Length: 117
Image (cartoon, rainbow, N blue to C red; front, side, top):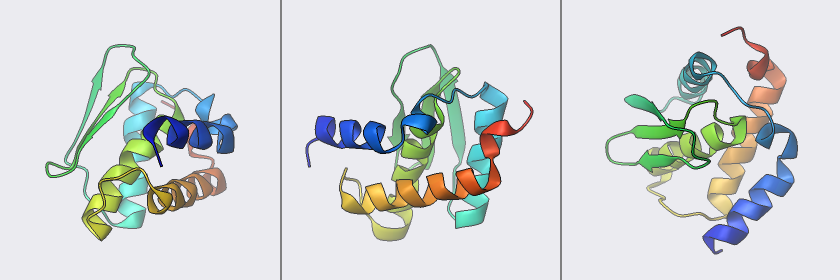
């Protein structure tokens, strides 16, 4: 699956989460809760600028997200770390999409975007 098709499919599937923007403290809090629940490591969350994309450094267990990031972008980058740690997967594929769905389902259940900053 090419990157652009993957991103489009992800945005179509999770429109609500794509439009939920988080304050920086909220994003860090949610990332910690997800990583703790699903038992994977996030060493650092770097917050920068106002772009609309993020990065995941698999081997360093770091992610980089923009200020006021969307919930879907945060989950996408966390899913990359999870996939690498659990399945040694670095690609945009069906397994990554399943992990994103699992994380979104968990966040919906817990209403994590409603947390106070």
